[in-house]
Structures are given as structure tokens and as C-alpha cells.
Length: 446
Image (cartoon, rainbow, N blue to C red; front, side):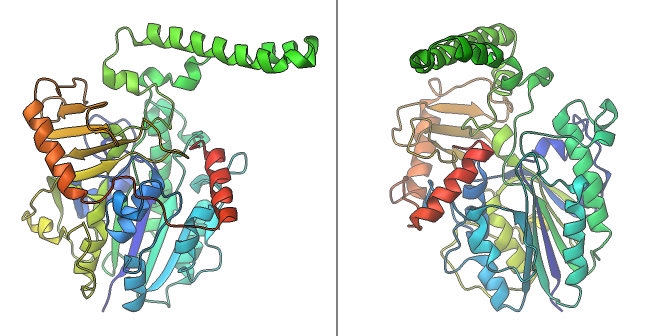
């Protein structure tokens, strides 16, 4: 009998907040899954943004093959959702209400497939979203085998913590407390499934910034809005444009001065923690994610070798004995890793796209030993190399001292990308494109 599959993706959940002794959040339910299943301690996402990662996950392809500037979820002809459906699985899901998800939503058999993710009416697990998720589980019991994809946005900024979890008892930061809350509600969902008959995957699309001392960029940035409003009232209308420009320059200067003062005694890792949330970044705090497989008699193990989000669906496929139909994927099954037979592979990385090509676009390679990245269109610009064994927080760029390693990593990157790195996204209707971009702007991406 084919097992049911519950795939939970918690947007923005960092790996170091789900495993290890240094975290302050309380996660008894995630801990239970980790204890009873296989936890991959060094799972790496393909990018620092959602859509590129979802494209990689569902197609088991590196971002440069689906388009590094793709703004929507692209499902290739051989994507794994289609393969699961053709294998007899009933596909269900609950995802954020975004036009970019349309191609995936088309597969869902349930009626209510989306939830609101925009403030001030954003739906959280603790504000009724849990009931929507559970209601779908209750409704699909007679539709076995089923695949249920649940994408949770409770950690997406601006962060709002459930009141009963907003205390130091549940974490030393709003982010940690939100995870404690998410864990509680995930427990309510887990009560509805039988892990003997269900394969459960818990992971994330990318990491997140946790500001040092809980002081983020927005806390440092001065609020001069009152002065701007007064200025508009008393100054002639023809001066408003110049006044607004002066306002922005003044605010930037004050922010930079305050940041410089804040950063004096901080490490590069701690300085990065205070950057705006949507800063492009391939540092580990943005790409290290949890990955747990549990249920269906999967062994209780901790796997330390590096794996990728590209590997998730090939692993599911082997566990459920899905016939192989596509040999052109970049991922591989981790099933052997459940018996400690896994071999590491270098991971390709790319930053999420802005609306247009930018000098900040970054491409790189990660192994267990080194992290290498540079500007996507010029291999000589923004070159970074970090020794992950001795410098896990990536505080010291050693690219100049280890040019031989840089050369080796660049060769790996070149082999992975036999065609142009900046492959364009698949053509989409202009009205759809505009709608997607408007939604992304509301989320702060563009």
C-alpha cells in the first residue's frame, strides 16, 4: 500500500532553530519528529528566496535551469507533482494567496487552497489557519493515497508573535518565540495523522535574519515621517519633490551613522543580522534549512553530510517506489543516507532575483568545507570564500589567501552551468506578470 505524504514547508525557518543546544525556542513537536525520524543537519537551499527554491524542490533542478529571474512557480513537464498524480496520488494543498502559485494550485483537489498572507488581515496558524489545515486533512481520509503540501508563512515579516508565546520563556527573540508558537500548532496538525501510514517531510525554503540584541535595520532607521508631514503642510507644493529627496538623503545619512556606531564591536555575522530582511545573501543564515523525514519505518538518525533541497523529491520517489521517468534531474535520493551511505555533492547557490538584473545578483558553490560566491556575471567581482569548518559564521573572507581554492570552486561552478547563468524566465502573460510583481512589492521583495 502506498503511504500518504504530508509535506510541511515553514517559510523562513532556519536550521539552527530546529536542532542544537544553543537555540532558545521551545519545539517539543519538532523535537519529537527529529527523534523519531532522520534529520539532515546540513541541508542547503538552492537560493535565498522562495520561488527559486520551490522551482528547485518540485523539479529537482538547479535555479539556472528553471530561470534565476523566475517570479512564478514553474513546473516542468517532468515535475514531481505530475509524477505523483500519474502514480495514483490525490494532490491537496494549502498555500499563500499568490498568483505565482497558480501552476501548483491547479493540481489541488480541495476547494479552499489558499489563505491570506497580507497584513493587516494575514492568517496565522494561531488565527484560524490551523483549522483550515486540519479541515483539509479531515476531508481527505477517503482519498488515499494522498499528497498534501502545506506552506506556512507565520515567520514571514513583518513578524507578529502570538500573545501567549510572546515572553522569554519561549525564546530570546521574536523570531524564536514565533517558532515556539508554530511548533505548538504543528502539534495540533500532527494529532490528525498516523505516522505508520504517512511519510512526513518538514523543511523550509530558506533561512532568515535574527537581529543581534533584537535591533534590526528598521529599529535603527529614524522615523522622520512627522517632520515630513509638517513640511508638506507649510511648504509650497512645487518644493515637495525636492523636500522628499532631502528627507530620504537625511534619513539614509542618519541610519548609516547609527549603523556604524552599532557595528563597532560586532562581528561580520552580527552586522549582517541587522541588514534589511530582503538583502540578497548566500550566507548560511539564509540558506541552511531543517530537513526531517519521519514515518513509514524510517530510521531514527542524524545525518551530518551536506544535502540539498533538490534531493527531497528524489528521496520521496524512492521511498514510495515511484517509477523513474526523468534522468535529467540534479538531485539524488538520500534514501541511502538513512543507512549512513550518503556521499556529499557540491551545492549550487543563487540569490533571489530583483525585478531587473542587479550587480547584487550572486552565484556560488557550497561544500562542507568551503563556501564560495561572487557576482553572477563577473567572476572577478565580490569574490568571497569561507572556511566553514573553522569559521562557520563566515566572518573571515579568505579568497585572496586561498586563490587555489577559489579556482577549484569556480571550475565546479563552470561544470554545473554549461549554459548561461542568467537564463530568462518562461514567458508569461503580461497582466499575470504585473499582478505577481504587485504582490511581491506588498511582500517587500521588489
